[in-house]
Length: 258
Image 1 (cartoon, rainbow, N blue to C red):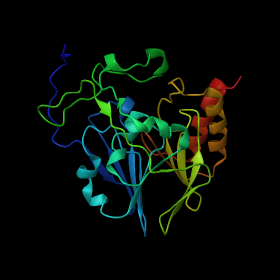
Image 2: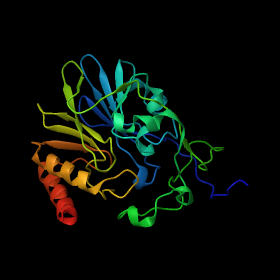
Image 3: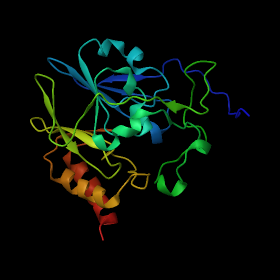
């Protein structure tokens, strides 16, 4: 039997594209609920570009922002949660940590209905989770029922210490487990810039999801606290600097270290 859900208005534009600096662009899906509203980052380099995460996959990211994807590009998944890898398969060069690579070999459920989300309320922290996790539809005949994350195996694996070289910029891969086993960040020591995925962001951190590990998350927080960060571009919510980074790390450690 087909599930009936409320009729959603059709969005005039699905992707919001914001130029952050000369070489960094943020892409976001404003019609997706905050729980799943991932920040997608495009970084332009001299020789090639890098894309950090790719959203829920309701509407093609590559088509919506095709002007950004005309050059050689590596798509990096900070982890395999479906709000970060929905468009991963749209790119030929796909990199992620080996701890979560196997999950990308098959299609997976990517729920957009609260009733389909197999996460108990107690693990969702302070997020207000609505019955429908989108506020609009991309087209008139689209259905949010039984949304799927398409299989998109990585074409290469990246781990601690690997370098993503853009020619004029170089990002070091740092392994930041806790939120998930294979969570990674991209760290540019020369500028103090961190693209952190869901390891840290300025919002409710989720450490009770399947695959999460509080002890490893504490170790990640101690490591992040020691980094000489200038700016953090997180997987959700807004950017922040070192002072706020330390506050977030300390708050988490105070709540979770025995």
